[in-house]
Image (cartoon, rainbow, N blue to C red):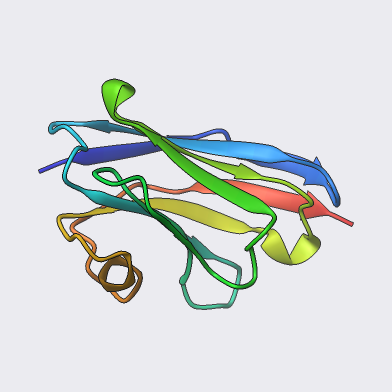
Length: 125
């Protein structure tokens, strides 16, 4: 079983940039699909972005497309989400997720085998 630990959350002004990272241990990420989900106060957890650690293919929620970039580094067993042009509505706890699935859509729709503890991102207006 893979263990996931997020880092890099914090406070940023609207329009700014921030990166959050996910470090995995226990297993190599090659063969996994990895993703980020977020949960804002009072709302359900929602999908943000995903990446295949095998092919490098990516998939984004419409709300973040063009502003967020997901990347993965198999050699370092890490994944990063770079967030640009941040908006107050991006404020949430961001969770790293991993699934032994080849389809990013399946990961998006619940094919998650491991979750991180989450890291808080706060965007002030």
